[in-house]
Length: 201
Length: 199
Figure 1 (cartoon, helix red, strand yellow):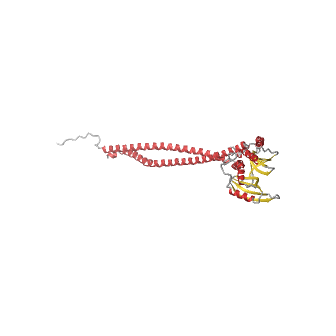
Figure 2 (tube, rainbow over the protein chains, first blue to last red):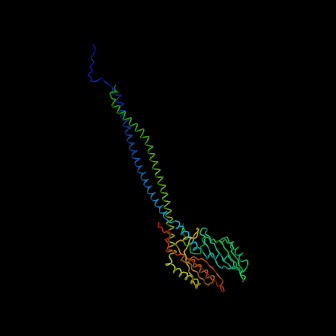
Figure 3 (tube, rainbow over the protein chains, first blue to last red):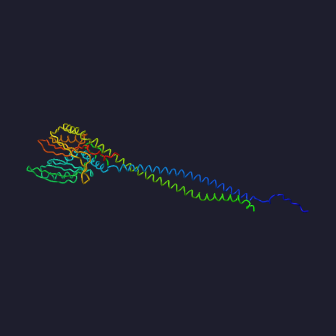
């Protein structure tokens, strides 16, 4: 006798387990990627926001610096620098004249003059650039060798250079008058006179 | 059959996954390059800032340098040289005092003045806002007295420049000294020193 198999199901039987497995797998993968993407997006927005803010801050600072630079340049261009330069050069020349020690020059001349030679006058001219003094020296001598001796003595002194005669005259009394020009460079650090502070350009 | 029955769900899940994969591959890859680009912009901006700061500092240094020079010039004109009404009598009194101190008192003093000019390094002389005054005198004295007078003039607090010295033999051991000294006064009629521009 054949057994009776009753099928009371409303629908045919299906094994959905593979489908559910795939659904779960896809869901998990999607969730993982989504979380990762959200985190990436948030980080990008956050990091670029702070960087953008920093760029804006730096650019603002640059703008302010440029303004200050332009302001300083404008003030510099507004100056009469040529006139200031002329005045500075002039002041330095006068301070050099003031600082020039006549006492030391006279000491120096005393040490080189022969007994029969007498100093009559000195006229200095100051050269600011080379820091030398052009001297026009007027002498009187009793002998004909007076000028030669004086030139030789001055040539031996390192503080005098370029010693050159301008004229020599013998008068009726037999006295020789001669004029020499020379460059005088005082040794530094031996100022005999009060030094006045210079203006630095 | 079973896949077809659940296709809607599967399609939705597949689309979601695909979207996330696309976002991941594109955004994640672009992410680093965008960050790098932003960092480059930041570095460039910082470089520009440093450059501008250096230029500004240089300009301000120059300005401060000129400001100092102008102050020094102003000090010399206003304090050291001053104006003729403020310093002339004090200068003459000082010269007379030094003559007495060196026992070589001149009988005559001669005075002269002219506008001071800067003649250096230029074809024509330029006014520098100062007037030059000279005092000349002749005195008979010994060589020691002459040296003492010269030394006192050099050490004087007054701004005095010995311009020229001439000596002549007198009687005995006496010499006749012809001395010309000069000083400077700020010219009140000319614009203030430093080009008249206040920094």
